[in-house]
Length: 113
Image 1 (tube, rainbow, N blue to C red):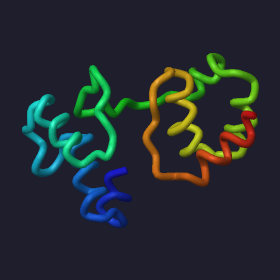
Image 2 (cartoon, helix red, strand yellow):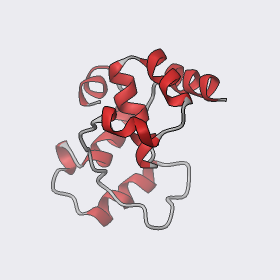
Image 3 (cartoon, helix red, strand yellow):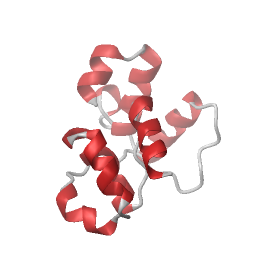
Image 4 (cartoon, rainbow, N blue to C red):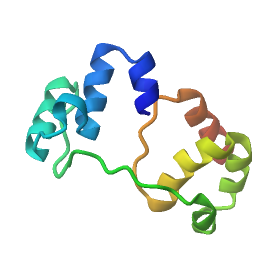
């Protein structure tokens, strides 16, 4: 994500990424101040209990596949290894995956319907 944000993102997108990950000028910012900064850039109300920075965790999707419905295998075949790790890990862990990859998200929706 950092590489994509640093290469392709608008200034606003870069600011949001810095807040989400507590990187660059937000590296030493407290959690409550990160949430405040996030809310100032958001059009939506920040949900109760929202915590920043987000945690980046390594995924071992091969261990997680058994936790997913059968349709996940078909989704995995269509996505390829990188996108499988990105999207299916969150699905297996029941956590939100943030992505700007609209094509893959729609592809997953159409396969899993």
